[in-house]
Image (cartoon, rainbow, N blue to C red; front, side, top):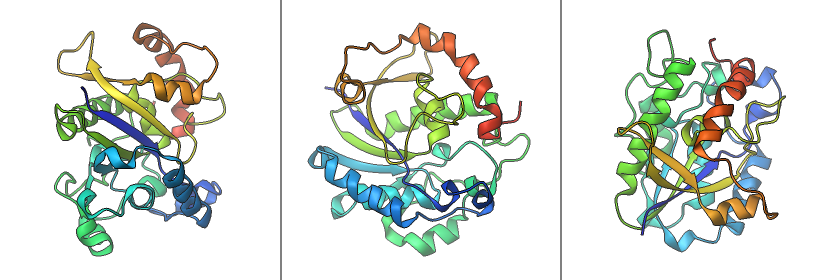
Length: 247
């Protein structure tokens, strides 16, 4: 058996309501976002199999993870992984300090994997919003998730962001031309690890047949790794202005 990673985009935050709201730093979930978490909690069928919770350290991802998957004391603390944070350096994608997160969420979160300057995205930072940095960060995040998941058949829930999830999964299929992501709020897709064909230090995330079937009940086949690489540069170029990535 292999571990299964249930990847989720956070629920609706106040920054999702308008362009003006993107000036809010580290925004909270809206009431609709909280309802989306409740809906996901009701529809998700593998709660009994989840052994760990992981989230980006932004407040909306932590709250989504807690509301959709939390409850059992055996699942806390939620492991916060700074490499899962969103792409841009806009205020809405800029996180809070470790002290602030600790004060707000207390023992519900594990801050060990969050570095002190994790919300600083200036030039030369690991979190700078450039294609090169994002591809490297996604690789680092995949490796960290594989380490967290271990070698058994554990299933873990991981909450991240619409833009970054494309980099994390290296899946560029289905991104609308006028949107920054093909993931809707609280969308859940399930993945397992596979070897990377061209980088022995990397791992791939491959969507499970069951997850793919939930999204595409008709007999449409997923793109191969080669096909994904072929469309990657085209889709990334399309996403640059939408995700506020530095060209």
